[in-house]
Image (cartoon, rainbow, N blue to C red; front, top):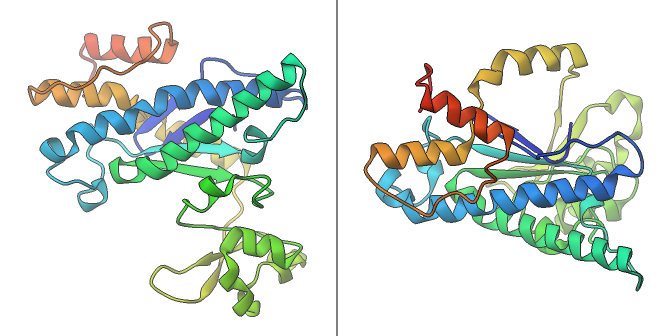
Length: 262
């Protein structure tokens, strides 16, 4: 999965470029994530400005996502690579350091301001310590779901210090092959933790489900534009690139009045 892609029920955003699968891809992928987040970070601002008059509530979770206000999910795989701290004084290092610092700022903004208006950020990483995922991002994420961890310190980084009090629920003992696919999570409203098992999904099944549900995806900014037009309201225009092929395609779909267009 391209880290610079967000998917979810009713919403899909794609970075303008795709990059080769190679070890050298991380700076390029970080640039792709940066471009995506710069566009996506404007969505909570637009939605926040109209959510009360349009949905009648100040938090989308109270009514759920209507078709023209889709849940938007940003999945950042290998998240730690996009927040890496570069040290050095040459121009390339300075450029990469500025890029990853801006990535952290943009993702923090989406994590903190996106939930109430239907924007969910999922960070996927093998490392969740503060030197890998900035604590101002990690600590703002309400749910941690780690699989096996080799040390108690790594478990604490993923679940918080209270996991020390629940050794039977710790992800550290999950190193036996019997526990492949087993993760640990905190239970909301309860002081303890629970283990959950996630089923294996083959590439073929994942492809089949993705193909079968791809018609449910939509560009969330265009949905908001259509919703506001139908309600006779206006808001700040989406700062989207006119050259983005997916944006252009969906505009053509709506212009031609295809079935299912908002």
